[in-house]
Picture 1: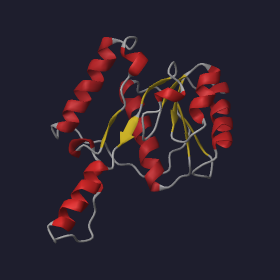
Picture 2: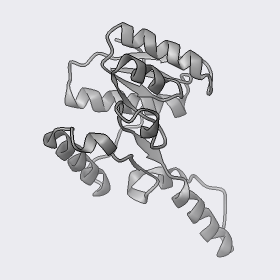
Picture 3: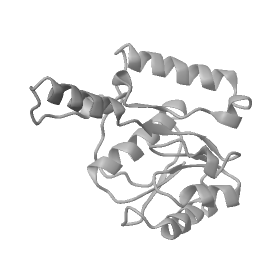
Picture 4: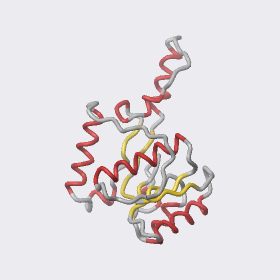
Length: 178
């Protein structure tokens, strides 16, 4: 599996590491490739890095940056999107991806302001799945083609997260290729 990401900073590392951890949970023998493009927005550079990974044998790629899905579409491999439902960029390519929903965070801040008790604080928990701040994008076209056991595994893990029985490790170390 591969990932093309912005740069090796904590906010990016935790996303890439979570993707790799999920892949390793399903297949402990999976090999990983990671590339950083050194920019938050350079789709041509991200696409070039993705093509290099795909040409080196990556079967599924995590598109932490724009440009990666385009490479996956051209090379006909599967992709996981990032932070929004990006299936429209590759309906036959993008299986799903994490979606970040700022609404719970903003709602909490507004609630505190209206109550006159707003203070600076860490709102990170409101970005977690249990508080509605993140979820997986729909499978769209893949809903019909993904094996039932894969979807069941995802739903089981989601239930464990929502019940508080599983918490995704937050690993901010810079990931490296195998």
